[in-house]
Length: 204
Length: 97
Image (tube, rainbow over all chains, first blue to last red; front, side, top):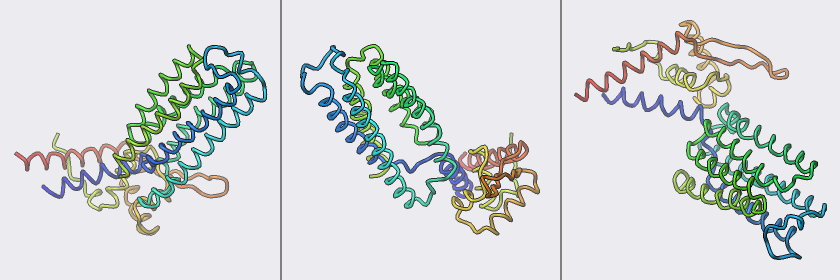
């Protein structure tokens, strides 16, 4: 019964398209990862440059101007990544004729950004309390929670990215001296891997 | 359960509207228009029809000064849609065996 089968397929497809944000481009994941790696490199040189042996001595990270420069670097990476994701998603959504402001994408963004913004505010609080060594852990964990939350409204693979970010975040909580390396792995390497997989699977 | 072919879903636009409302708690007029690629008049007619069947309900509100009309499936609508799906599935199964 050809017609019934077509009808069921059609129902399934429109349920997907209406409830999930599918315009997220794999390429934007790769680029976000590259920005994060460059940002980590800059942060590394800001924090450790005159005292190369990277390691356990957190007292080296204290001078205030260094911390604020690192924060500006992190913020730039975030803004650049969001901007790139927006540009590429807009391009993709034009191709598939689904608005970026469709209910599904609004839900996706709300689910992702409420935890992310809360994590950012928490970091400012931690900084004010002199606990900036936990910033890497908190950004990883809240980003991971945001992704987990948002995975209901986009392609399911993003769940695995969220689990990995959460694990790295937990490690960074117990070993804050490796925070920057873990941050670079989470926001850099994982994004590139995830973006490449998504690119090959859905955009290629 | 045999399911039942529902005339209300004979039209493909109405079938799509109902599918969207099964997957989304609510959906607004303009988003329907965009996703389904239909004219205002055409969409309004089908929404009216489903509303008359009491398969969907309408909620009107304002966002700032702009009126926003959203739609949601009623319990009855969900049940009818489920029956319709079961009917289609059984149809396929019967034809396979």
